[in-house]
Image (cartoon, rainbow, N blue to C red; front, side):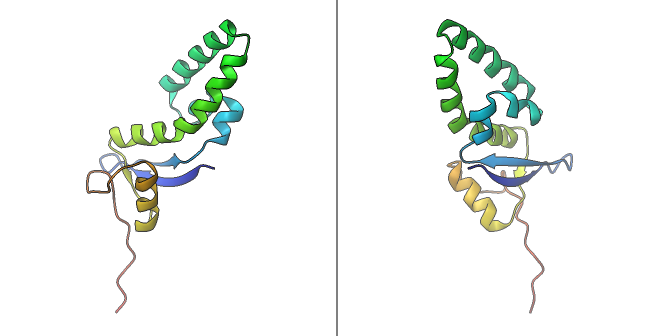
Length: 120
């Protein structure tokens, strides 16, 4: 199941939701989750490849692509957000879990640590 992680672009202030883990929506709806996330180039690429493979294999290849892509898409989407300048903006625990799942090391280039006020 996909897990959400808040991400923020410090240059623009834009906040989006990143995901990691298995994507059931990608399994069920193919390329369309990328369209809903405004990831247009990925939508076009996956949709075209899936249509061609499905046509050539009478649908079996399309099912195979959906299964494989559902394991890969959330990681692909979130790492692309990091490449575009977004940073993890969840709690320190959420950031650590997301980085571990994506096989990344947290640092100042990919993480905005949100900590509450110090009580003392």
